[in-house]
Amino acid sequence: MERIWLEVKTANLFYVISSALSVLIAYLLRALRWQMLYGSIHYKVSFWNVYHGVIIGYLANLALPRFGEVVRCSVMQRTEKVPIFSSLGTVITERLFDVLILLLTGLAMLIFQYDLVFDFLDHHIYHSIANRLSQVNYIWLMALGILIMMLSGASFYFLRRRVSKKFLRIFVSLRQGFGSYSKMKNKWKFLLFTFLIWGFYLISMCLCFSALPATSNLHFNAGFTALVFSGFAMAAPVQGGIGVFHWMVGQSLVLYSISFKDGLAYATIIHSSQVLLILFLGCLSIFLTLTKPEIKPIKP
Image (cartoon, rainbow, N blue to C red; front, side, top):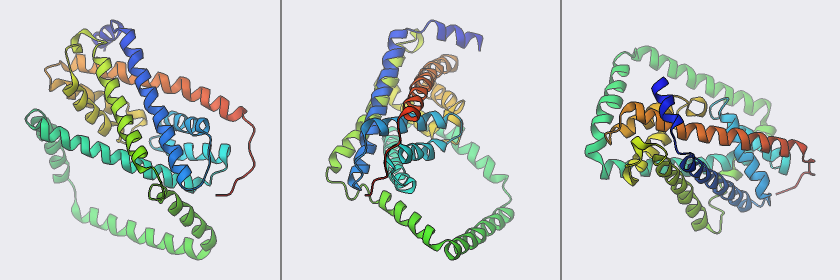
């Protein structure tokens, strides 16, 4: 840790700040994209309220993984009176496109850099999963799966019988949110925003390479691989990807002859800059949201 800290202290702040600004642009594009989904289901929402929801959601994810998705829907319910389950449907739709982009980038990495990443996937991923599966008691696993299915079915039946009207309203709201993309007029703009978001994440990765002497010679290919690894790391159920992000990004740079120590230093710098950005902007958004007077409910 002392050697990593020495590396971090020598970082060029210009490139660190430039990297953080690229991530900020991606956040703004996320807000624009989410606003488009609301517009397609006839909710005219303020861009800044949507932006505050996005940033507060990221802040909440630092406390509990995936909790931010619910929190930002709550923000939109407070500021724009959009039903929370309608918002949740749009969030899930938005996340599905992000997962699709992550899978496509991962596929591209395998196609164009197969020789480079195959050994890592074989030793660190495949063998690890195989060892875990070999230790699983499949009888207990099947029994647990059947029990979960029975409990889920019973819960669904009970909820439908006891709170059928409320359950129906929830289902209608979720379906409205899920259909937001299909009802959108300018689908190409939504897709453009999606690619731009990931493009600015890639720019952020590449800019931060220049912050450290050890990684300053890395180029686009390394940034692309680090982006894919970091994307899967952030999908893990861990608060803000802490630990998983650092290990995955550090290992991705090892593929390009960077020592794991220097890879960890790079991951620490880029992750810390983003966390500090979210802490500052998130607290500011909470203050602005809580001090803003509530508006009257609107109908879709």
